[in-house]
Length: 369
Ligand code: DAH
Image (cartoon, rainbow, N blue to C red; front, side, top):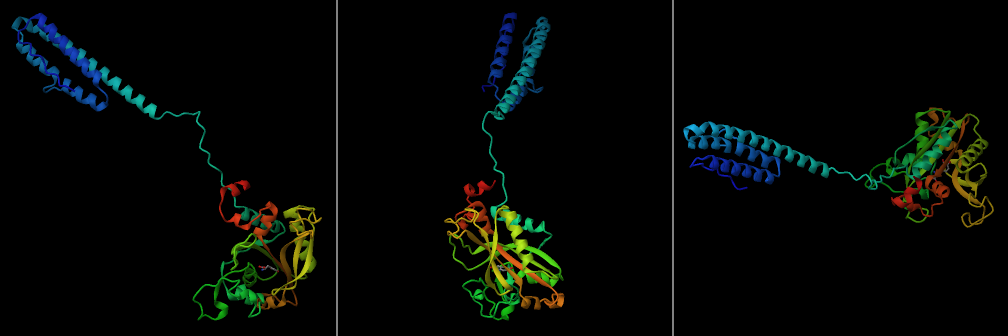
């Protein structure tokens, strides 16, 4: 901005005074038009109004000095009038600048409420967890309490105390993921990733004398290659009931009720002889095919039945390991069962491949929202 130099008013005449006043007001006007910001305005104000050497002070000093004696009064009056007009113009300019910056701020904050909003999808429970909770809730309603145990387990709890013979194939490294570098430990203390939730049966019976009703949800691991129905990490829900006079009828009634609660009242169950080291007798429980109601279809391999879980009466050899805590197989008996959560989830939601549960693909998961 060019700095305005105060006219000197050397040869005083009323016309020269008029001329100088007009020139000064024009300069003031020019400068206010050029102001863009608060700091522009402050510099401008100081240059015009500063007591020491501000333009108006200079005008006052030089013009009064230049005026002949009789004209000093008139010059003083015009200078005062000029000061008032200048002050008003400077104040007005400030108002304008402030208004402009408020306008700019409002423009920057402008909100277009007609734009579509940002969609934040709502998170939901993972389908595996959802089914696991559902299974647990069915047993909770029958008076079962909920137990948990460690995923890194000892050979003792995972196998030995469940009556697995020393060279049982399930202990093989083909099936079980062992923690490395434990060769110097006695076999029963060696750590592994639990291959089932059954070790929590023993852990619970060690802590709690009979009677007992417990469901145990949890994650398990096996050295299985991933295919459409197998994953090295999956989930199970285990169950255990121990009391006086528990019979196979109690097992059948309990599981039949649970399957009806999970799959609908029309579903039927049947028990097929099987083998587990920790139950005697053992059974595989099957449900009537939920897709064809037992008529036979591709899903049930035209048998009308789908195998769903393992179960049986607790083997007296298992009770031997917790005998000191009141588990005397001559006085009490019990049943146990274990089911795969992914398998049930796949049936319930007609999921074709187990890997869909672990890939985290939102297109799959949002179907459960
Ligand atoms: N633990 C077995 C498995 O992982 C399932 C099982 C079968 C659990 C029979 C039980 C049972 O409690 O009684 O395949």
